[in-house]
Image (cartoon, rainbow, N blue to C red; front, side, top):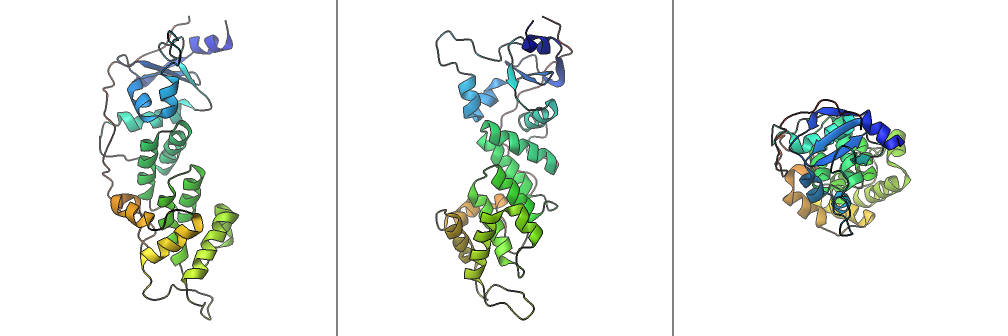
Length: 266
């Protein structure tokens, strides 16, 4: 028996996400999931290619427990959190911790689920306990749309005080240079106390345009993006998002149906 088949024979069906009516079999470590492949084919270009064989007659992965889609370096707990996005029984209410959204954002980026990625970003915006520079580092790590980052840059550029050493270490050299350059272009001369306020009458759009020039995105695109996605953007007057917690849901649900127990050895 191959190590793969041996691992499958010892696998346990997930108590919640092994759905008898579903068609996609997935293995995370030694836990088997059975979920609706529709979500994965529709939302992810990576899974769409994997679940649509290129050659006629080629058998698709994940059609049964003996030949599941094997998730590399993903724990059952992480995959369960990701599946919750699609099977959340509360529909429009996505109430999860920062760590959970971090996990979901990671997998959405890894597997190319753009809509799930946007949902994770939108929900992280609403977390006041998530520090600004930590949020920026997170968005950069997972290649979030840079228009989400411009208002965060603006928060730092609008502060009276420059970046601290700790913040600089978190953000990295290139980001610090962009922020410091934008600050210098925007603000008045420092006062005797070492503080450097923005000039009076400077508008949010002016700050956005200065930052867009530094990070190389189209001038004015952030303001338009903010108008179209009010819960995804920040105000210069507030360090945290102010959107409500009831974000719209774009994912049709499938019922969980009967739940599995334990697989038998094959």
